[in-house]
Length: 145
Image (cartoon, rainbow, N blue to C red):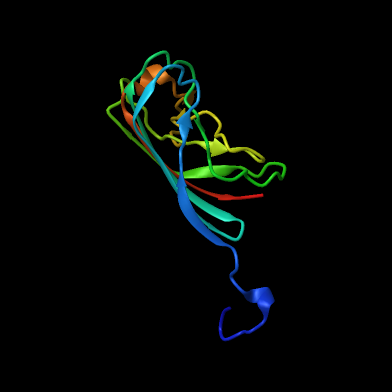
């Protein structure tokens, strides 16, 4: 309870934290060197952090997205969860101004985009050929169902 309030309606009774195992979509036969996710859930608010890197790219191809988030996002029209930060190093192709969204009612992100903050630049979708064996570290805050 807060501020000495004894009302059970104000009790913080939904707190959870833990690990989850994220995946890259379109990974095919790729193997991971690192694949870890961690979350904290307070009420319906989830903060999730993901770190992934391939050990071998195998048959990974196409657009890069992330699946396996621990809770469905709230299914409200136009309510997207946006990445608060995306960091990637060791990529085959340098990409700047990275952004990822999680649409309403999903545990899988949309495609990772680049050049989202660059005015006058054309944005694009990150491909597994761009990523190669590089790593991705991303954080999200979202509202769970």
